[in-house]
Length: 289
Image (cartoon, rainbow, N blue to C red; front, side, top):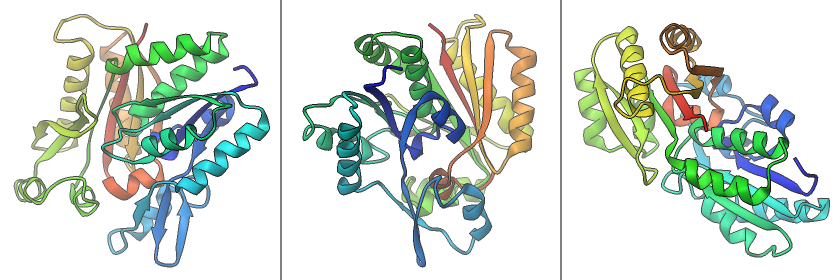
């Protein structure tokens, strides 16, 4: 992409480190806080470190501070960056997007477009990958910004997990939802609604095979908008400590959806693992232009 242009995101968007380096995407790390230390997501803590300390130790997470974001913008200004496309998870799930909006106003020399994806994890990060590809292919900054707004409804991310305990302890779901799921042994399939708030798409009883099949069904029903069309789309399979499940889901997609291009599987970051626990399987689809 042009030397004066940068894509900025945060670690909750789950863009893999190797792709961020390859595409020139800058990530703001979220804080993962244990009693002994405040860790920076993806820098000095990884998801396995979080899983290894479950279930006895569940850390808290915190968004980057105003000072950290201000220091970042100051360094970007000094580097000669004049255009920033800043892509973040839903404002209803994190305050980072609004903090970036606030800080960006203090740096008029940098033209900043802040994009609230109304999504979470790679459902947000896939927009950073999309924008980076378009900019690296030579597309105009304004055109890419405009295309992101148009594509906001083109991404579908759904996921389920073995237990809602971690979402509950992190305050992401209420007592009643957690109690019913735990007692009835139900795995809800979760997505973000159009406002970027968690919603339950379906409820699954049974083993992992039932969960994978229902996840596949719900995501492609959304992508195909209730038709029988095999819609061209790019696929990412996020997982949390469930690599084998991700592989089985990829095999299912490749055998049944010829127009679905599986880009990669990915382990979610430490900050995401804190709130979901082990046993998460997700499916993210972005309709192609």
